Image (tube, rainbow, N blue to C red; front, side, top):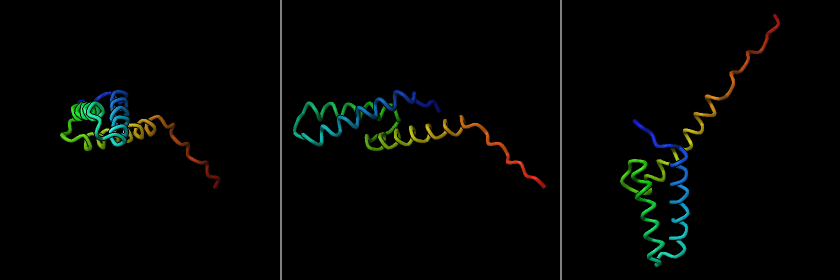
Length: 85
């Protein structure tokens, strides 16, 4: 499976969360709601999900797991302690 670029996922998730906060502050503003829905649609397409909430959760999971995996791979191997017998 081809995964989206991590930077693009992070950018789109950040945009989605920002518009979500604005939409919660002023839910009657049609322009804000439209842009929020557009950001959700883009995130859905990027993550391959049907629901914006699922796409946001999948994006967060992807970013967290990928970041952890990179840290684990880059960690230098531990040296074995010397034991005097």
